[in-house]
Each structure stands twice: as C-alpha cells, then as structure tokens.
Length: 260
Image (cartoon, rainbow, N blue to C red; front, side, top):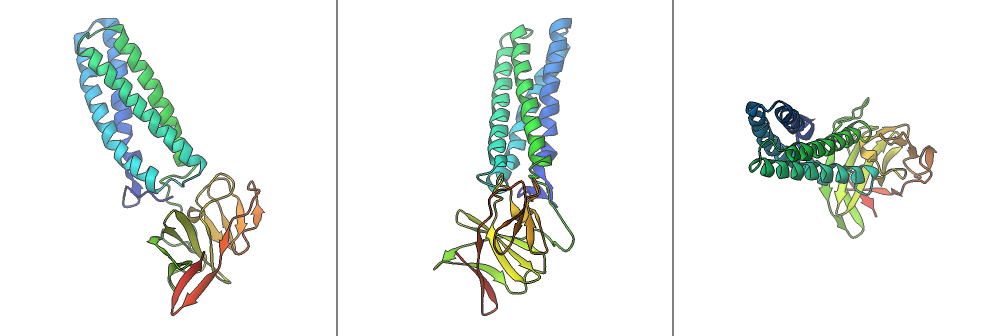
C-alpha cells in the first residue's frame, strides 16, 4: 500500500523512526555506563539524548498515525498489528518520560536505568512489529508490476446505488484503481474482457487487493498470494478459502459506474 505521508513515494515514517530509536537506546547505554563508572558526563550525554529521543518520537508518530488511518487496510491482521505497534511506541515514550522526570531529582539512581531498560525493551518490540508491517504486510511499500501503471486512488460517493468510478479510458489493461466511498473500499480493474469491480479485501487476512497484481482476469493478494477470479470472486489459489464480492460495472455517457 502506497503511504499517504511520503516524499516522492518514499514513506516518511520509516525515514524518521531511526532517530528516536538511536537517541533513546543511546540514552539507556550512556546512563548504564554512567551508573557503573560514576562519570557525570555520561549522565549528561544521556540527558540530552533522552530529550532528543522524545521529541523525534513525537515527530515520527505524526506520519505513522496518518498511515494508520489512511494506508493500513481496515479489518485486517495489519490493522491489529499497527494498533499494537502504536500502543507499544506510546508506552515506550511514557516510560522514558518517567525516567527523565526521575533523573531530574535523583541523577545516578539505579531506578532510572531500570526504567530505561524497560522502555528500550518496549521500543525493540515495537520496532520488530513495525518491520513486520513493512516486510510482511507491505505497508508503505509501493508495489509495481508490468503494465500496472502508477497507484490510482479516488474518493467518491454512493448515489442511488451507484458509485462513479471514472472515465472509460482511464485504465489500461491489467490496471486497477482504489475507490473510497464512505466506509467502502472497492477496486475498479480492467481485464482483457473489460472492466471489473470487487471489494478491496482479501478474505484470508484482509490484505488490500488494490495493492496486489491484476493479470489474466485474476487478482492476487500481495500478502500471502491468494488469487481470485475478478468476475465471479471465486478463489483460484489459496491460502484463502472464501471468495470475494464482485460488482457489476456499467457505462453511461463515457463514464463508468459500479452498482452496489
């Protein structure tokens, strides 16, 4: 799924997260050294790293929240994973904040190091889940395939049971377009036999089919490779067991409409 918060298709969240990770783990490292050596300068380094880590964590959270709301497919395994990822990061930030407030009163105390160790553990776990979101769920990954064209997405409305999907010549063969109509996510695709429309949700784990591949009248989910017939919704290859819902596409005066 293409990230909504990006620069030239490069998602901002993965660009920014290395900063708080480096600063906050650095805080734990220098404070640990400061505790065992008694060197005040090491505690001072940890102090400034902790400030930098908390500030950059808040900055990195902004594009992350944007992607969670607009890029992660709803009602999917990735949605649950992304929510847990965000909660763990928030918990880690609060833990480091607690350590920061404590060090203001008792610099050199072992409890500062213990609290920061817990925060570092939360940070590592959240980072691991973030990596899973990218590499397994393709969140922020801009998938391209032969003749697939650029990512197409549009917001529209349902009127009298119809969704206006676009112009007749907007898509080339084997290209797709994601339509957001209220709480519905529907994919318009063009096959060698004409236009098709289907729900943007793999029946296996909820992956976005618009981010997959359309070829030979079948759409393939990018997460686990399930394939579906674009006209009937029938499963053509697992691991999915249930089909997807398809919709009729009609043409009026050079425009395409999807009947709901």
